[in-house]
Length: 512
Image (cartoon, one colour):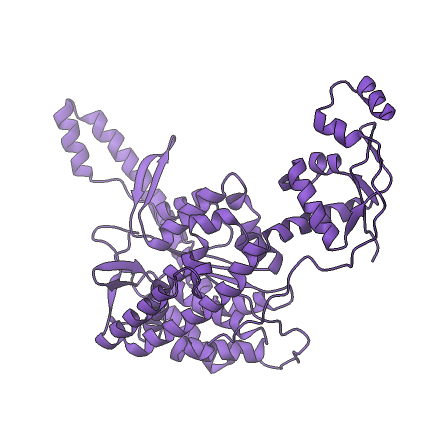
């Protein structure tokens, strides 16, 4: 203990925990454990039911899969999400007096090189063309608005100047009528908005918007989903999925309530980004993940041969793009007197579809009990009947744009798709929740390897390491995980940190 006494004498401000760590009595040397990966291998996914996508989406999805050779699930997710964005401004679903949107939130997981961008380019061509037309119209309308606005301001100033007395001024202003309204902003595709930016877009622009990105990591890792904004963004997105009004309270802008807005989401992300989302306990508890339809198909890399085909010339793709364009270009169902407040028509289930939907609802409910198959994903499974209704509405309106009913064929297709997403939720959500500690251990390991130093003390880890590992208890627990997986072992020699010998030190396996 003489060494410890010297430490106390030279460093009198150390805490008891740090003094214990500074004790120079050395642990016995240990062998490296067998090296094991930190990520558990996922079970294989089910096949995406691409044939259930209907007469328009299924042929397009199959053709993308055939020519681009991206996994069928990526192609299917992309056309389904694009259709949701087109349909959500036209139709809601009504079941026994309850109404909800036909919007959808989709997350597609795939490694770099799965040709997600190529699929996205084809799937959203109609939306991009529509947005371009809106922009051209906006430019012309903005020019006219500025002229009319300037003329109105001049006329208002003259009216106030010429007329004397309150009543005369009021009469003159009433005769002028309301000031010109600015044209609606043309954006319908937003790649990585903050929640505040999204709300502003809904206030001044189109009432139906899609949050879409083939690089969803920019959204997940951006300002909207950082530690300070994560819950606010998640809660706001959940309200939009539900179709509820948006309430704005701002010091500069005052208070307002936005009704009749619709949002669909499709984020394409890499597995590491998906892990961050699906293992996030706050997003799970808040409910955003239960509103998301997630797919992580097996890779097709290494099996693809070049195809000398212009996919845009294929009839199935032409028909798909034409149909979505027709739906997008159709006049929106707006509330009376409102420029950007939706009041979509309400689709009803026909008698056969209603019986099927009730049977599916009751089947799911029976599987939510503790110990039953869906109890581990109860939040998502609770919403499975609504997911099925939304998916069937998207398919029904895509196949039959003027329909007012959802028939049994489309309801069956919606149920088939929902069963696939239930399987993916069981495979991905549950695994992600179990692997949250391993994910954090992986981040710590990446930091340790980036240092490229063979030895480190525990104190340095929790003082200088990743933000999530800034206390001794967490650091100790994660280093034990890394030891079990063969990446670190206790050091038989102390390491000096901040001029103190630390015996609670670890060797890092820098070479395999």
